[in-house]
Amino acid sequence: MMKALVMCYSVIGFTFYLPSITGYWAFGSQVQSNVLKSLMPDSGPALAPTWLLGLAVLFVLLQLLAIGLVYSQVAYEIMEKNSADVTQGKFSRRNLVPRLLLRTLYLAFCALMAAMLPFFGDIVGVVGAVGFIPLDFVLPVIMYNIALASPRRSTLYIANTVIMAVFTGVGAIGAFASIRKLVLDAGQFKLFSNNVVD
Image 1 (cartoon, helix red, strand yellow):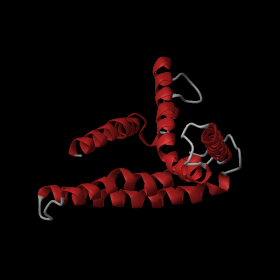
Image 2 (cartoon, rainbow, N blue to C red; image 1 turned 90 degrees about the horizontal axis):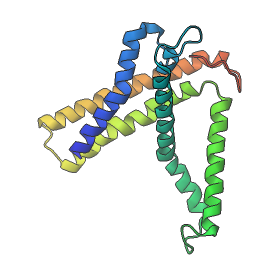
Image 3 (spheres, rainbow, N blue to C red; image 1 turned 30 degrees about the vertical axis):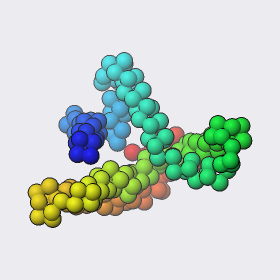
């Protein structure tokens, strides 16, 4: 579990914090919420080679697909529990057709919501602060402390508690900031608008 946690935090630090820090270093307070937008300005040449930007967009797409698969499993489980016939095989026509239909409708609904709401980025900020930070940084630490039952005065337990407290604070600050931004930007939003407020 310790190796998995170290690997998880290393990958998160490299793939999320490194671009954020270098984007802020390169563009200062003018950096866009999506660093790729800063590298591909509306006017003037791109600030990175085309092949690198294409590769970055491909990796973003792969990440979104993986996130969609992981976080949509709960919805799939609920839908399939009510529509499946457990007496027949998993890949029988009776179970496969409703599964494909329900998953397709679910993804179409999510895509419609994303296209309809130009403030989807603000909503993602709220969901990230409320959902992803606790799931990625707080819950693993709690489970680690419970699973190993380390003494409360040990360095490891105290370090884990500090990590938990810091990221709980980061999640709370992120949630308040995201909700504030959503409220401030709400007056500029129109359904299915191309003008996304950053």
